[in-house]
Length: 277
Image 1: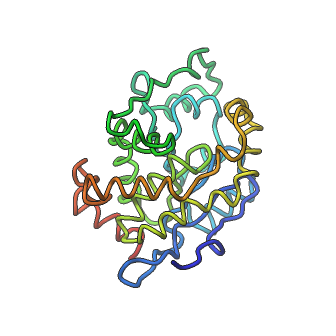
Image 2: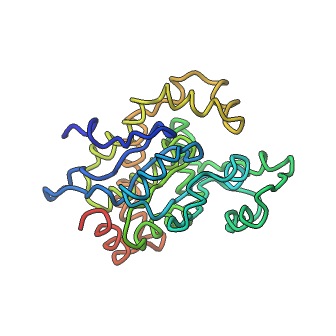
């Protein structure tokens, strides 16, 4: 396995966990290309210089937001929402009450929106498949994204595949769990070996203390951050190793899972080209 712990971080004032998916080795001896897909934590606190760097230097043209509707509306409009050349797409990976696909339209219509008190409780209970009940909690969560919101996992990858020129950034709150699963599938389609995907996932551990501190400063996430210690938030390589192993066992790999969920060979080829060609 090659070292990927340096050179891929995108150091910004307003994020802690932003990095480029370029530069990773592929099974055929190639490498993923930089400036195509980035992964990140929450983008709410980007500075003006961050926005300039992302849009003008890196060429950011699309934000793929994996947060829930409640998170987006509670956090409010981030600075990239004011940049006309950057498109925003929303694909929650957690089950929610109702259908809130027009969350950004709601935000545009009423920027002073007064949220109902129950927005913070809009998530539905997660269901755990019987054969997954013995798995560790993080593995169960990641399998839950695939089992309960597989439609939005596919939709997020489809948005990346069909983006025009310029970079896309995939993010959630921490850029660790929901972002980690979507990016793992994207990298697998690009034929990045499993061990490199796992190493990329685990890189968030390098910044976890600063990441927890950042999220703890937001009322939306503070309670969850302070109720558990930093170790419990730290990603472990064995979590992603297990998820990938289960996809191999049950579906013949991530590509097999994607094909079974409507993201077939042609779309996988488009995603592969997006990351490599």
